[in-house]
Image (cartoon, rainbow, N blue to C red):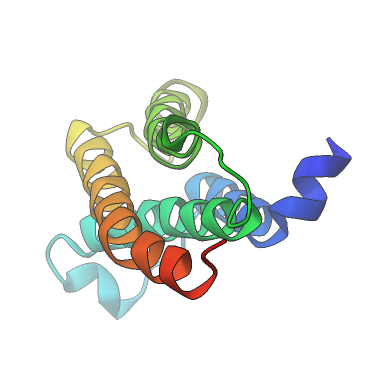
Length: 132
């Protein structure tokens, strides 16, 4: 466990923030009048989580030959599965939040976009800059 705290500190903080944001009761504001603002928030939360996981994974293993499927599992599949569990818990364990398939879709879309950006933009940059 100490390994993950040392190698992925920002990602772990983002995961804790996503858990908090997923289960606290949000106040009513004027932003509620903007249609589908929650979908944008879901996209950004899980895109940020996946993007930071990718960034820290690529940075931590820049000088090692680690299989990329480790990154795809840890930085893409885990956030998507995690978001599914969060949506289920919101539906069945809270009375002020509801699980929504569209929220899950935007969670997954955020992870997809972050993963594609990390793989096609950040990975080549880190590999070029820190090639062995």
